[in-house]
Image (cartoon, rainbow, N blue to C red; front, side):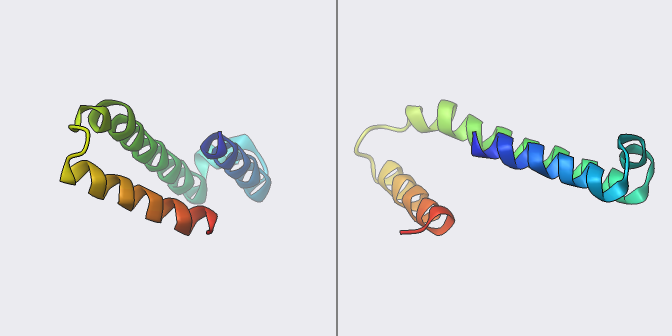
Length: 82
């Protein structure tokens, strides 16, 4: 949900910054921003793939699974706070 809100507000802010949706598609700034948004969604896709396809395949209680979960908790603390 937070990712969708961030993407939507970023798109609306970019349209506000360049003046129109057409300028977003035709200006160099707009094209670079669209490229950035596409890369953002590619990263979200990789994260979703890891979360829903790869993580469940790891054996329960394995050392690798424990390290991944600890890493995720650390990232969550950095992003959200203690």
